[in-house]
Amino acid sequence: MMNRIRRPSDFFSGLIFLGVGVLAIVQAMDYPLGTLRTMGPGYFPILVAVLLCGVGLTLVGKSTAGEGEEAVTISLWPLLLVLGGLLAFALLLLKAGLFAAIVLLVMIVSGASGTYRPLASAALALLLAVACVAVFVLALGQQLPVFGEWFDVLFR
Image 1: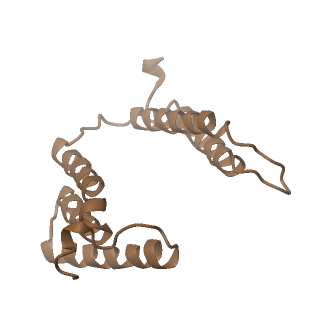
Image 2: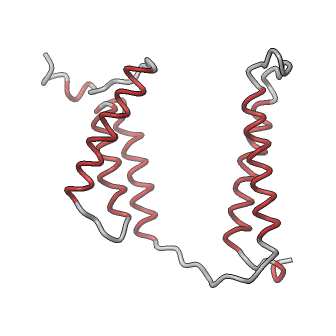
């Protein structure tokens, strides 16, 4: 079967979509579906998961058609920066707060691009941090600390 796969990136992306979709379906089966008129809490997650499976099947099917692609190389440094940024965000969210965690996340992850521009990254980080605080904390009322306990000394 591997020699029939002409686009490995589509094939493996499709498998990831399929895997996430199947896991979401299995997880959402514990919730009642309801009907179209009165949708239950499991209706939307299962609908999204089925769509993910559809995208996955489409990508797997597409991987066997058309011309082949050149081998794809994965750069380790950008991958590590993205994973490090996500880990830093997860570790800092409660202690440093949403604002600082987002600023640090953007500053770390923006280093993964080939052209790192510190001023542009800082401007983007501040803009995203303000937007996330406005949307998640102020508009949606999420119980996230804007500035965590590390900043308590500044705001007393």
